[in-house]
Image 1 (cartoon, rainbow, N blue to C red):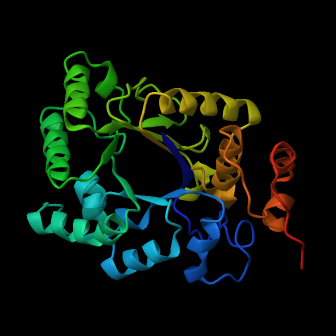
Image 2 (image 1 turned 120 degrees about the vertical axis):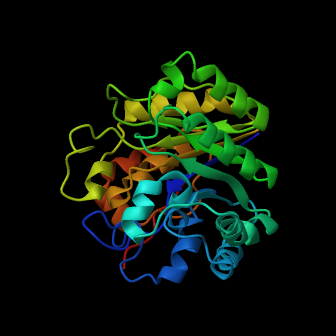
Length: 309
């Protein structure tokens, strides 16, 4: 049984929510950010693969920079899961061809060959609901990727997938049959939010998006939605959920997506501490200045603090 904890993405170099100067040293080169990140966490979600298939040479470099026990999960290309967004951003129709699958799978192959690839993540938008044809679309994607031998986790957000009695059993059966992890999410609750999902495979997969209800749909910049720091009480609640699933799963993944100004880092460090995973690397002084509550993590396990400049 292994529990992998990390964040959704590791590079946020610009904007008000940037990580540089908070988690990373201000002038740390991009090429050094992954090794720096891997000092604190044993897994990460690749976000860039949502916008374009990974370059195999880049993925090979990622694999070299990560420790042997480190795991990458890769978000599927938006062409597979967000056709409208793909069309708007590229001006091209999101007609999926066999070559699209092959291009994406070639991109993540170096990570698989290095033994460092966890599940692929199919994240669907809230607008993806069980309308006629949607279950067929989901089934086709799941079976296509599983035929290639990749582990898969699927994030669904619309309540119809769990609450519609004509759909929910079919989804659960599909995921169990194909060994797909049904992603357990935490986010602000709305009328259309998905309900409780079952454990459907040997993999547990959590995504914690934050609970910034006020700015979820109404924000000046997209990153504002993720400007949320889980409280100590909320963290205990999430840790209990992770422990419960980990007792029943072979491998469990937990990622924080509340990335604004490295809040995901703070909460992921807290989860690691709660799960008994020691933080052995010195914590960046800039992170402690921004989030003095991290001192509680230091007090509960033997992490060290780097000396300031």
